[in-house]
Length: 566
Image (cartoon, rainbow, N blue to C red; front, side, top):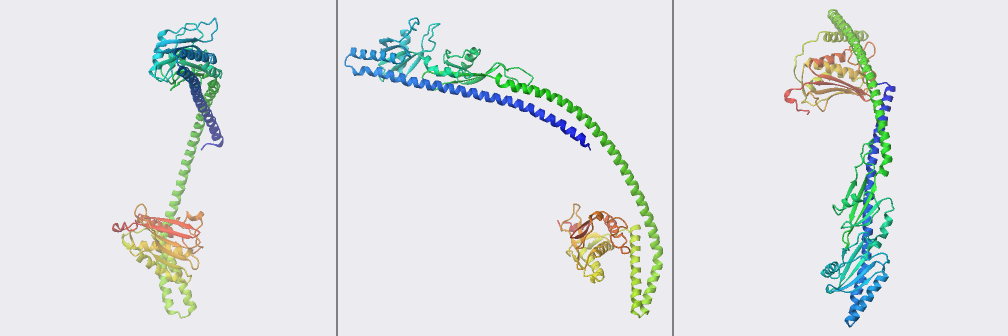
């Protein structure tokens, strides 16, 4: 066993090691969790930006659709062709003045430009040119789906401030006339520019690759290459961060998420990127320190554990040696005790044999005196003498049986009949003390035993039980409800006496040990019972408590009755 100090040191060392390892695992999990939170945040920002773009586009589309419908429908209120064109032109001019988004407007009929209106531009900013081929293409697209807005990327000169121009067209229901306008889309993204100042890089890119909103990020080319590969996705720009705390790989990388705006007549893609470094650097530093501390604690723990194991092993060897010496001393004492018992048995056997003849002569003389004496007092005295001689003879027989056990002649035996014979012999002796002696064994119960030795066992157990009882107590011979593991039947003698104290219960089978008063017991009864049971390859159990004592002997059964109690 380890000492208290060794156990305390061992527990403290591995406790610190466990806490350190747990801190490292928690740091790695925290890095992973924080990275997942960041990616989720970037995804939510991309979705929010895409929804904002979609909202602005939907609002502008509704306004543009209403304006175009008013232009197309205006010509229906004039009777002459010239008046129709005047009304259309006045509406186009009004649209350009009210909404400073329109740079140029055309009214086309059957693919031909009928009238044109220019927007309000600074004198030093040239207006982008639009070829007639482009106008016809937009007109054809609009007429193919009357009432639906059609949009195209306009031709933008190199170096022009108009990097987000659109040609938008709407035809009448019959497809006979169209209004085509050149729109400056920068105003559509004013609200999105504010989102780019939240600490995240934001892009709004056209499907053809032209950038509408650009945060001037160093990852510009990587973003364009990423979002051109598929409509929606997520990548990590640069090397992914390492989970190993001592590694600085990937601390400057960024995560990028992009979403396309589906269901819009003028589709765009929004992309959001965020650096991982601000999120993971602090946790990364803590994990590095924790890993270093863990290495030191692990080294110390292994050293301490090795020393503790050495001392524990040494202590175990010493205890094993002491246990071996104690075992040798105990066996030596037991051997001496057995030699003494053997000597006592031989002497007792010799005494019993030598004293048998004189005691027999004395018993005969007492029987003769009993027949001749008429005085009651003298008869009582002689009867007492006769009883004491009988008790001496019983003690001598027990000594002879223990020292020279006879070979057991086994036969099939009815338990109830044999036990009743012993109970009838003892009933008169204990009737005056009002002790109820009964046999509660089924008639069909049979065992394999020597009849004389079985009755001797029953006699010793019944005598012990009756002697331990008080007035009005009960002694019963009972059958145990189950056989044991080796198929033996249990016959128990149970009394309702005060029981045997626990501290002496383990000594009841020792030779010459008795709880009876001096002069009333030899201490050989249970010893002889155990020896008889060993000869029968059985066993004996002793159970005592506040409710009484039960001594159970387990006997072999005849083969044909082996299933009676299973």
